[in-house]
Length: 459
Image 1 (cartoon, rainbow, N blue to C red):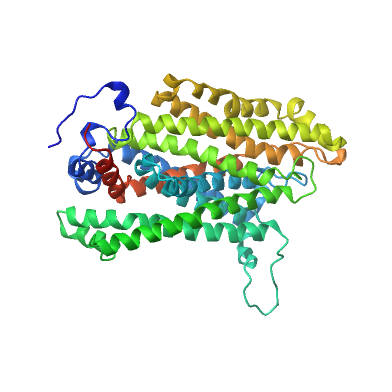
Image 2 (tube, helix red, strand yellow):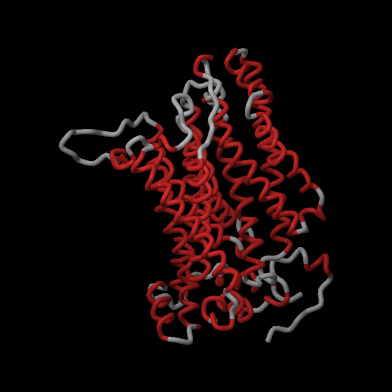
């Protein structure tokens, strides 16, 4: 049993663990219970969410099948706006995916204690989002069955990829990032698999988790090798994440289109990825906290500090928007100034204003401590931020392609039902993967939480 300690409320809100979870056995039990004591755990809400997300995922794959069989003409793309939803969704998902590893790796290198309760589901978010992001460039191709032509492989026709094409950069960036994310995520799970192996009460879980633990025994030699490897992977992860989303930014910046050929795009895309990713981590943290009763491990202090990070990112995003506007005006190019006017007064002006409201204006509420310490309010603002960042990705594509240099080519994008089904279906597939993850794997890192509890100790 864990003894409850009466603490002052203000003091308690600044701690990363609460009394009900402040104990090594209590922490292990609260995290492992949903996996090993399923008969005592109510999975009704999980099954409802699983059924809904499975239905949405089936719709997603039906839409992909129709794209393969009928072509991308079932989308709303036209001769001017050739990217539509596909590339915008790709940029949004890869941004979500980038943030998980960036958050985990950077917080590990900076030795931030609040990382312990959030890194596991942030890294899983990275893995699933990056995998979904990789689908969109493939189905966007006119002949998606030949996507493997992007790889330099020996063939009878002596075809080699065009290394000046952004598609090649994306292919290698996504592939390397997914492989790294799998390794980084799995290495962090090894000690927890050993804990589940030792706590298992039946033979099947003990064998499965034992195999996944790779013979981990928790010796000093094992821990030393683990710490060295984990730290080395974190050092590799940060530049990999920055380079990956810089490549995504250069997909646009290396073109000659107005509004795209800007040197600010690579760092601007990296900050945007961190921004949307942190917002998604907040949403997942709130749901995991509620669904698995982890109020003692994911505390108000976590939401407070994540709200501060999102506030900082919103200011940087606002500065980036202002820089784009100033550059368009100061450069004096008629096409750039016309595009800027189109953003505020054109067809998509209501969406652009909503974008600014969600990404810049509303997050300023985080200046106030009561807002940052209200989990419901932080969750709601995080949802709005993700909506705003999705609108930003959409409008980066739509505004420029529908209002470029040639007025005769100006036309608007009208999405079809298949555009929407592909978009919402991808989100349902992400939810499905995440639900499977939380059912099979500890959603919070047990060994890092134990380390944090030992450092905090009773007060």
